[in-house]
Image (cartoon, rainbow, N blue to C red; front, side, top):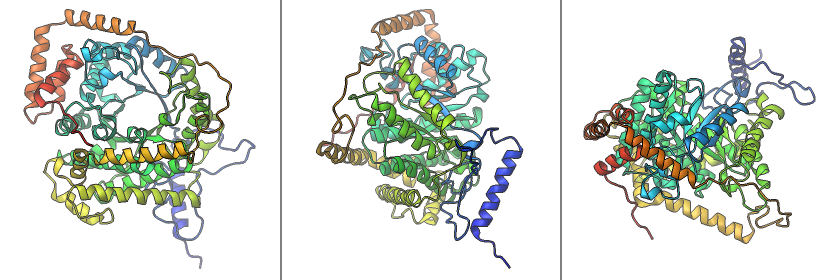
Length: 583
């Protein structure tokens, strides 16, 4: 009698799920063969012996090999190019170009005043308006930004954290004025304040007020806009600041666990709110390390969500992530080499199973992307998607001895970092003690998020500058290796002989600032000042209670209160956070 092995059982189970997806039209009608005509299977796995539960099959816990049994056969990743410059009119034109040329979604880049919750006429904004992203002062700018763009049909991501909630309110009001039902909106708001204290440094207040706003946002979206993801936990900025891949993975997932604890502390059901959490990772040049990082991320997240936090559904255990190629890997020297770097990084993201992707432009070390450079970046993704065949097989590197060992290794490094964070939070438990951690989570039910195990460690690490010092040390070690020549960068410390090619650089005129400030003055003159003052004052009153702040903030935005007016009122109420000096 032939005995069925665990692998054969898993293969049969996966095959049944794939067949069901195919029979209901969830597999794309495409030619899944190699360039020379050989047929390829939708996924490959072990056919005998013991299949480790840690690897599994595509679409099955712990999702090491991807979230869906169909891989990219069911749906390819979303091409989501990050863009924004000048004023809303200019950026709206760029968005239309991206969509017309095959982009699948939008990703908004804001200028520095907007990222810091300042209006364009604020003295601190002088010289910065529209220079590293689009200037947004009010809902009127948002209306122009998305003019003639079908918000009910496209997904929109907004990379902003400090003033994320008022900016999101402006997006909602712009959608209302388009006549869009807010309940159908889909997209992602970054809102990740932990990484601001850890790496990017674009906060407005101390952690507690920010976490209050994020909790309000999570509640509001869960009830009113279920498809919109209110949090995109970002490792990208951590990696760009100089962290290692393992640090990026661990710090980012720890932050994610902190937001899970925030949701639970609010009494939200984890199977309802966890699907609204997404992630944003960097894809750097070490090809296999990046692939292993993405696979480990899915596995760690699924295990913690199920075993520690009690998530029961697959969707609540899924780690969905957007990837951006590594801006820090690009060089000003021999900039055309950056096309190759970006292509390699994009391919790593795809082979790691990214859900959406931004590819950097070759000139981004020098300026915001020119239209030609932006198109090359877009076409890079399209070549990978349409010409290489990598979309035909789910997790094609699954089972590779090297990839699986590297996935295990980076997971182990991340777990060591989790243990350190838990220790800083006063816990004597480790990541291996999932039952103990789950019991601790249960004991904290009803308590503020800041008292939960991972959150305590994160806040302590921020307060003591631990995260920043760890990243600084990693960045220093890399720079030393670069200067010694131990790490090679073509065109920088090796193969430096080159013919000079001039690049056409996008330059944002200072007239943009003048025009933006003038437009803001015109809007302020035309509004009902008494209504603005009353709406902002009511918002501040709500901030003094435990009520959700979104309705009052939306009313302030509808009254044409500006971003700076809203943020300044909250600064007056909550104070300004100043990072302690460390030497």
